[in-house]
Image (cartoon, rainbow, N blue to C red; front, side, top):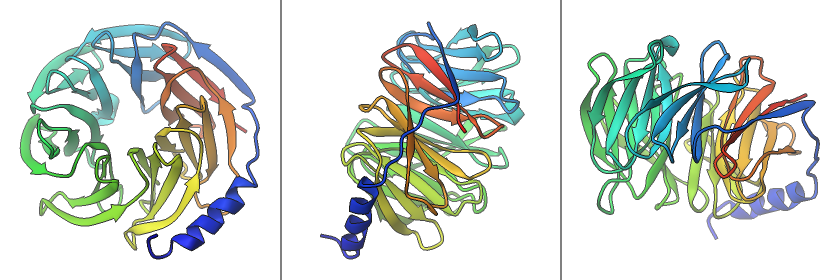
Length: 321
């Protein structure tokens, strides 16, 4: 047992006795959203949802007013993670089986460049100034990779060797430090992109996947799919401050734009759990979604949740109190 774990276990046992359950005020489904849709990103104005369709090798645009897929474009093979850049004008899509990052012009809705990285790229994040993006890559050996891309030139400027099965990646909006989930190491690595060094390795739960950071950069939330819990990292101390049971096979994580709530997609539970991001209350609430939920985003109003469901080819839209 690691030092400090008895306190965490006590908090976990109390937490299990306290869950509250409520549904959204309003919910609806958008159906026929590609084939095996996996990850989503929201336009800055909150009117369009972008979705990677893993089974059809496409990036889709969903018109949220009309509730339909309004545009589609072929990208690389087996697209997974994506990020929006250039104030909503560009998308970067990690295409796992083609070893590329597709650069998509969202105005003309066409691929303008394919950045070759090799291996199996899977997740993308853009720094707060929009100058650099970061792509995690499973690699073709035991070690994974982190690619640093110049957003002006669309070129890879550095490739770092990292741990086993890197997946989720976020950039601090304050320090610009890069946090990377190492699914095979059960750790989050903290990378200084300027020095290209790993400054910290933080132990989390087993099989970590999704990750999100608060707008003030003070906390990082990590979903651990095998231990069914959520690790909360204090980014000033660079250590886990608490671990909370959250649901079966948690995967996607996001924080509302105002930083007040954290949302976790529980894949096997077929629901979303949410609680205060400041952890002033450890009571979480849930709402049900469709089969195979994987990712979630929250609209600019801080109340509308968008959940993509891989096994149902759908988006669930829920309004939260």
